[in-house]
Image 1: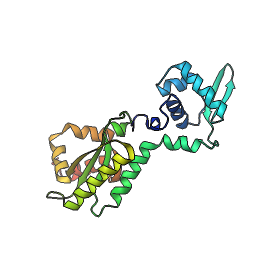
Image 2: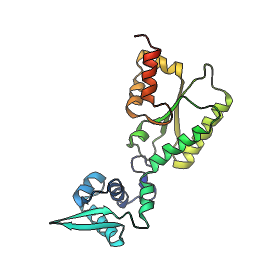
Image 3: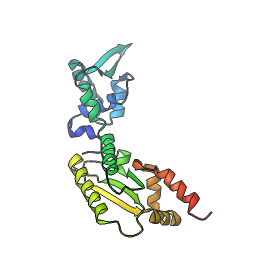
Image 4: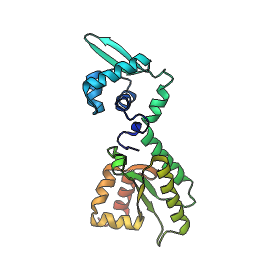
Length: 212
C-alpha cells in the first residue's frame, strides 16, 4: 500500500488524489485549489476528473461568480467507500492497537513512526513500529511469537513489511541519557497505537529516572 496515497490501492488514477482532497473537507473548493492540494496530475486533468465525477453525482459542482466550486456529495451511495479508502492509514493504526491489546503480555508503549506515521511513504515503505516493554531479560518466547504474528498480519493487511524497533524501558532510558538521534524521530513522528503516549513516557523517565 502506498502510505502517502492509500486510496491509490483501489483508485490508481488521478481520481484517487482528487477524491482524497474532497474527502478531507466539507468546504467547497475550486478546481485549482483541489489540484494544488492533490499535488498530482495537471490542473486540466483535475478539472476533467471533477467534471466526470460531478456527472455521476458523487461530486457536487456549484457556480460561485465566475468560478466553479466542488464538494464531495456525502449522501451518495459511493461516498462511504471513498471515505473509508481515505482512512486506510488510520484503520491500520487502529488494527495494530487492537491486536496488541489482546496480547497476554502487553508493552508499556507502542507507536508507528517514520514515513507511515508522517504519511509520506510509498508503495515499498516499511511500517515502522516502536515497542517499549518492561522485561528485564530477553522477552519470553510468547512475546516473540506475538510480535512475529503481528508482522504477518500487517503484511497481509497492507502488502508492506513491519519493521520493529523493540527495547525495554531501561534501554529507552539509556537512549535518552546519551541522546540517541532516533529519539528525536519518535518525539516528532510517533503515533501512539497502544499504551502511554511516547512524549508522556519520555517526560516521565526524564523526571523520575534521569539525573537532574
